[in-house]
Length: 280
DNA sequence: ATAGGCGCCTGCTGGC
DNA sequence: TGCCAGCAGGCGCCTA
Image (cartoon, rainbow, N blue to C red; front, top):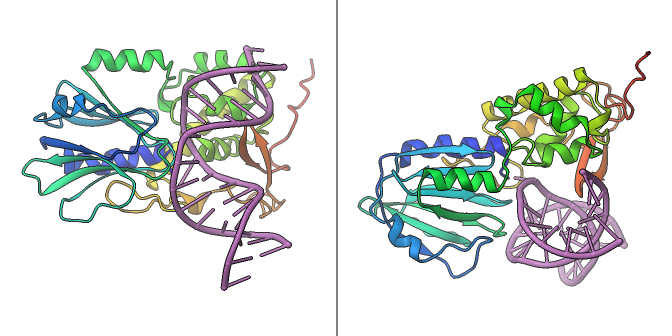
């Protein structure tokens, strides 16, 4: 479910119900997440107030006015504030009681590819992202840096867009939609792009992600934002999940291949395999 | 440097 | 109808 637009939607939805609230206590399930929640963090969190919520790539950052709570939703993670009386759904791994305990913040993750971790302060947070070599936000992607990432690599466009060190937040859906928007073939190599094509791709990322955020992300399967409202961008997919269906531009059937180990959808007519030979 | 494969998990769908 | 392979929005690790 969660790529950048979905994570951004969750963060926006949760600001209202969460900012200013005090975390009273933490309860954990026995099942282990990818990065195990350490019991000693329970005390480190208790009594702290949520100062702000933000997003970095696909990470959710909860600033506890000192300690930094970091959550990644993986493939199936959900984060929501609900009345405590409401029955806990299966696969709820972390529960933070809020204020007087009438409400709680719940982290639920069916496949447990997500994780939650606590860092001591902002500088630890900086170090965390540095160690991960997390790339820039798509909306602040410097054209010169971007070109450098493409110029000398023999990786294909799909692999490059999925690489969080190049640009943070793009996943499988938005990679396909972005490459279609730029009218490039996903199998093209970074080094094969002309300067204009590289710039077209960079702008396509921004266009696609902005639009997806406007539509509150994509709800395929059962994704809902932090408020329980569904996303609508799935109704605007032009290639993702449309194998065999007519291209919205040229009516040719959309094809599905595997690149970088992931299902990849594209229009064989609109997205040319080879860059046009430039007359020298 | 880079592609490809696997593993981590659970649940749903489509084809037989 | 029932079963099971295949597939799913992420990511880290290993090998060649």
